[in-house]
Image (tube, rainbow, N blue to C red):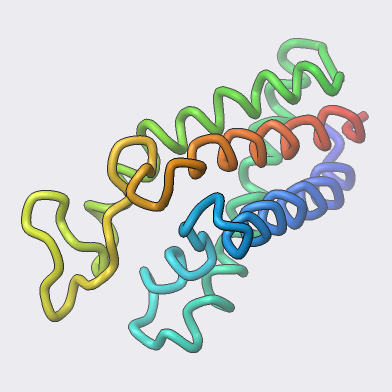
Length: 156
């Protein structure tokens, strides 16, 4: 496994994914703010949450880069289209399983059944994160497809 490439391109791919997700918010495609959601898991301070969340997301991106690298090595395929395929599975998992489970672990996301309380004030993602906008699944899948493609292109 090429650790140097995974560290470099995992960082780059995560920055691209995060930029696409962040850029889609002001364009009206989604209301989801990944760094804010992750950051508020660790702090109630809404000013510090985005930075803490960004660092958390970057670390998660690196961890996933190693999972992608293991898949590339295991399959013997180091191509953009194989990275794209892994990105599709990754994005679908995030939407169908990751975000719904995340909402039950997050101390500040309201329960889908109970709604907001004084300590749980963030909206739960809902099915395929559709509570954050109808474009959220598309943007999330697209960002993960690009993440996987970047890793597939540059991983040797």
